[in-house]
Image (tube, rainbow over all chains, first blue to last red; front, top):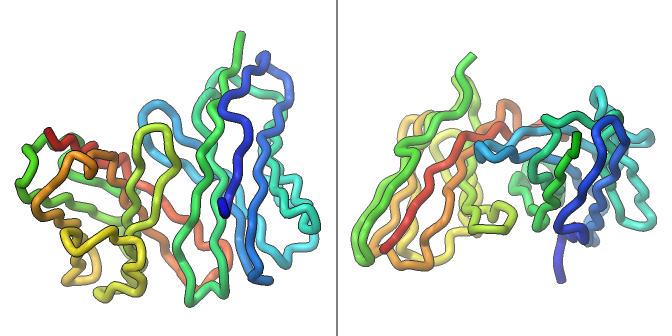
Length: 117
Length: 116
């Protein structure tokens, strides 16, 4: 089974609108971390936001917020007031297990976001 | 400060040849990771170093792939007898404190490997 599922291959949004990128995950481990990365056409992966499985509140970082619904195993990324520079591939990733013993990230297939002027 | 750097940025080789890909992590970062990203896919984990030792090499696809980090900073990913299926972008990442839950990984620009 896929560990991370991103069901939207592509999204098109008007500039200044908010956008939600979907991510569902599959794990039986009670301890895990969820990450979102942005990959512009230049290829470099840029860290956006992190949510720990025990965190009580949804994570926020500037215009990025994470809609974490633990019972549904979803961790959707919300970008408010989208900008042309937000056009990129977006990847959801998970780290399973206790921090010291488990460091690898498992990535989803990604969503290509295009912001239209 | 300087981010993660990778050299070369592009490598074209012929099937059966040996290649080395280099990664310079962010100064002071103790953890280093290698991932492979095929076209249209998310990155796939290959290997993780904590200091000089490989703490997790479960993602290496076969014994043609090997990685070292002899002094705990620069790492080299080595691929023997390259095959066309090895063509991908090889990404390196580093992080400062694996004991932290957040422990975000900072990625380099990648090396695009093409095996003809």
